[in-house]
Image 1: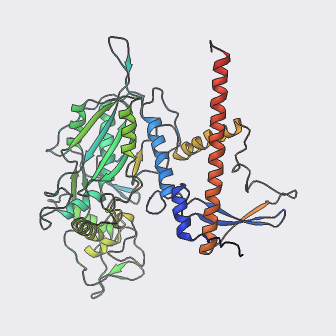
Image 2: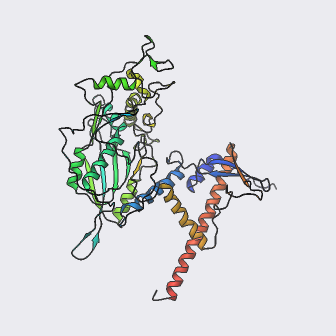
Image 3: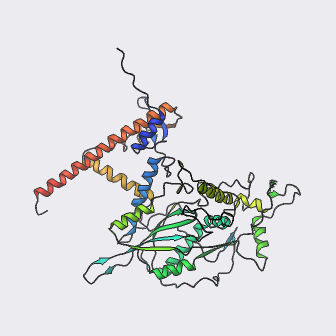
Length: 506
């Protein structure tokens, strides 16, 4: 009687198993050669994607890391240590812009009036205390509270919408303004935090997430450390605006023609006349005495504010809500790929069509469409093919980072938070006599007696069967580590109970 046939694991089976066991579904496979004995092994490195449609396991891991970062900095009672700044957030992050709306110009500055618009209220400017934690309040019964806030800011309406977020009348819906507001949303957010810090009297710290509403207009959820009067926040929102002083881009010049690169710049393909450079276009615009901003944007009237006290279920719920959609792309946040809504898809496509041709920055290739050379041009630029993420359908104008964290939020970078999580697991294993295998395994610092590296890492392109096998090995390895960690936790809990039982006064 022949032995039963063992079914071979397929890439599809490996993918489903990896998702179920929270293992990376598309690892970077590397070949490692042990020069001590000549053996070769395959190692899977996680892709670390933040998108669940790319890798659900890595996206969930990154979302949980952000939850830890948010919770750790929100309700601090002591000042966090000053940490090195992370990569700038969302086209500038916590580096706030100047209200003067100046333009840089290769060593000089193009300065415009700093006078505020007549249709916005003035804001108070109070002395700023050197603190980031909120004030504590004591009740008559002796209890002390240090409240913080959960804040939501939205963009204005661009036209009436239905329950599913799509326009009632697509022909009158202001897609152009919606697209421009999305492209310049980071500037408005930076300006808002600048005003908050000028008016609140202390160095306000925040953890914020950028998301689209059903109508695909950007809005901001923010955990704010400390409490700010609601009336003051409403005043700040009304007084916050951004003016974009760009050359006019109302009328396309090159629709069916494409400007040509001459080696020194771009010219009209029919006449050979050079297109005005970015600085020349700005000079022409500034010469107009009746010139107005190319775009002005403000927040909408809807403003949600809630006081939060920790520890509480409200605080935990707010942290989960802040990070709820971080693993989703902008365009698919409110769409179901399995049952698409034709109206929603048409709404997304229409907004994307507008975003494709609008300039996203001074260096955007789309300026060629309006007869202007972008800043610092080079060969190969073509209107409609700007490489910035903001033009992509999955980003819909929000091409920056989805998470904005002020520099003194927790006093740690995201990598330091990640190291903290790994340290907790490693110490639990070491306290139980288990050495975490990833500390020494295949480390690049391990050397041979002659000083050369023992392990040599190289790239490899595995076939589907090898790829599935590597994923399976990762699943088994993770299961073994998880079992060791649970054993270590149970052992530590048992030791704690024993110590308590042996010392009633302890």
